[in-house]
Image: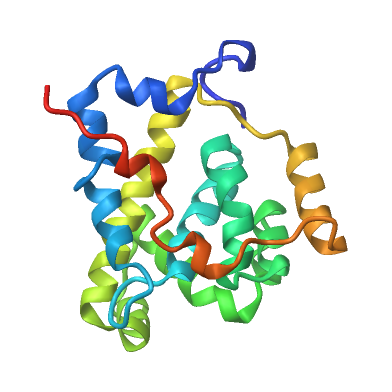
Length: 199
């Protein structure tokens, strides 16, 4: 599936957000939704880093639009957070039967929120892991990433080719490239701290 705007006319994601600065700041700025969610990420009773990364990878890979702002940043972060390589390959190949059992529940939750197909069983299973507040934050995070992803798609944000994505995965598998340390990706949204707007 291709981006809505041709690759040679791709727009840089963050300058596009800045075209409507107050809206952009609300989304990714200091005190905006992303900044707020990331302030609590991985604290007890809150949404976890592995939940966050499950959202980014599931939404991008399910759609087949490898949005560069998501895929380039969040593939290494997904591995750092503990998502299995097998799961990333299964999502890429649309092979749900190959998703690692450790990752199935989170992916089912992401899809249930995204697709409007939440069930009591899916909700309660996730609540048992991260508590009620964590589940509510997880829902906010899924909806935020879906918005973020669709915004990038609509404005023609750059896309990672399948070949480049496969190379990235292979580099991690062979050890040519190492995932970052988990602590380095928690509350790492550096753009949020510098994206404030009063007009």
